[in-house]
Length: 133
Image: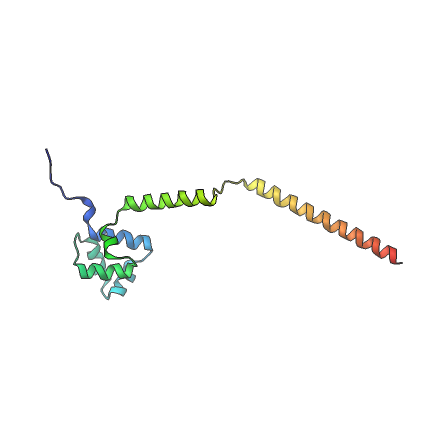
């Protein structure tokens, strides 16, 4: 038995809200750019459907096209980020697994080596000065 239910993924206002949040844009800024009040943006984000011309204006301010808003999905965005992160981590070898203690020991060893080289240079300088007298 089939039921014809409307997919919950068609709420344009929620999609605008999510994209706005991801982009780090506040409702006040979006309202200012659109020349409307913050309450108008709030109502817009609660609307299931928007006129195409309004959607185009919102898309322009958000830095995307209207099709990106229409086709937006949280799941696809999360998958994209996860796949991009994993691909980049693998291709660049960035695994950031290091021990802070090992790093401190390495820095300490480098410091000791530097001090030993400085001491040796001073001894050589003293020998040269003794030889000139």
